[in-house]
Length: 320
Image (cartoon, rainbow, N blue to C red):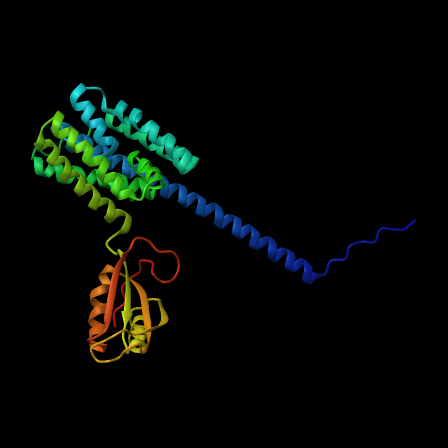
């Protein structure tokens, strides 16, 4: 009846199709490379966390029968009183917390945490770490440093190596206390039991270990360039904003406001308010320049735990 006509494709259409195909191939290749890099990054962070934990335990705390906070502290306490293998205790006591994390956070997180905890138990059982020192103060401080590195590195790898954090996240959703508050209460209970079962001196050194670990975690997760939010209220806002943008290379937000009841009688006068986010290393430079522009500027600062997007990621500091 009717003959099927051939499909005619122009050179332009063929070129467009070829261009789209190349774009898709390039995008797929980029995704695969990114996925591989993320896997390597996760593996590296978790591996370093496991090695740091093993060194903190075998090289510092265990030879002197010191304890830490969290699940590791409970394991060390039971090990000190019963002699039960620490590697087995670390796995057994963490199991309920990991199962809770499976429900509350996700399967991938829990699987990585199970692998990390199991590898830590294996490292503690067989890896021949040297005993570094017998000085109690050094043991408490540096043992805490390596145990804090354990937590920070594994969290960067998307897992945990101590189930206390999972329990704290779960309970914080049920009560008004924060995750940090729950961890503190949990550890105070452990240190109190340690003072009763072992001796007060051991509990006091454990508190020192915990404090060293906490500061190490903050440093690893937030870095030396911890972000600070700065709010600036000044009639010279344009000049200050220009300095932040041009000299510091930082982004900012300007919103309209009114100045309140000042001594100079500037009641409810319209005023632009500047908000910017800088690193801790840049605060001195920013405040010094603001003081030059307007010595009476009102400045409010607050710590920022994390940021997304914009121009606030860690970058080389720009000089004039």
